[in-house]
Length: 281
Image 1: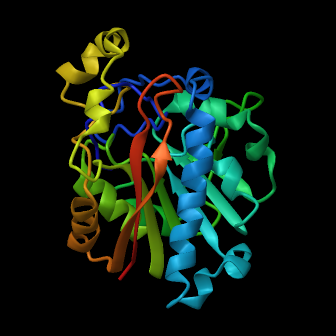
Image 2: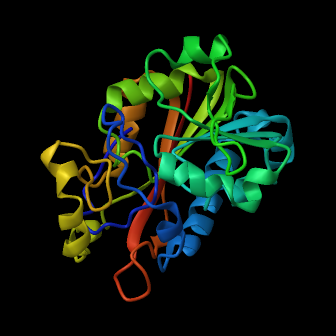
């Protein structure tokens, strides 16, 4: 997973703490209640589908009418704000999280009750390909069954969605190897992220206003982790996000600007967004 610098804790609730499993700084219910979260989720779900539509011009199986035949893994689903917009389109949806707090909230959402949706506490890394092939059972707790475990619904996926996650990833090399490992050859990764304004301004950095929340999570900073609200990598450019995908062997890589994201709420400047995609080797 990658991380990026938005000092303003927009806390999009993806508890991806690769390498930092001891602390969970996320709160799914609080995240869903934040102003701008639902609006941002709706926009980014549309961005994800737009990326697949673009790709379908040269790879017909990603056409909108065929998505119901495809399987999707959402890496860093948080409490399901985006998942709820994708579940109608895909035949199989597997939501993964590193934050038990986020997954607990997810399990109580209507989207988690759908027949085509399952979820697990999964840390993607170099061993993920073998773990999925071996049908490893990951924690998949519900309120009624807190010790429940379940294997992923399939061993390899057609689509991997990484929505506003990369800037919170502590070990991007491990993360990207994991995502690549659970995609079918020719499967697609779609990433949404914050990006710089066209004049180079880092709007995320300008929005670093929530000092109190950052102080509350000072332990994450002290541990060198960006997997906490208010802690992120530097904001991506279209070029840098495409380079990450290319460096890990993804083909037909592309990226585009999307709508501005009201991720910090109605009283803050909206943040430029991007989506990027590439085909697994």
